[in-house]
Amino acid sequence: MALQPGEHTTLAMEFVMHGDMDGPHNFLVHMPTSDPTRPDVSLTVLSNWVP
Image (cartoon, rainbow, N blue to C red; front, side, top):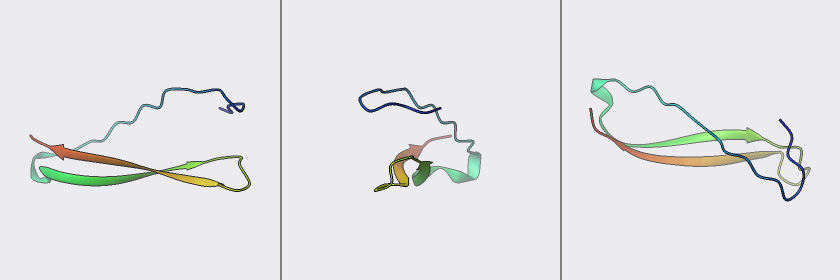
């Protein structure tokens, strides 16, 4: 999918956790872009998972 300048979209992510992974987590999601000044953007997802 390519967005033109000024366009926007919704991004959906799913993280699969199990019972031994409770507590805070810091995930990085890498998004490739066509912007020559920012070819890769990292999105930070913070969570505090409770089983």
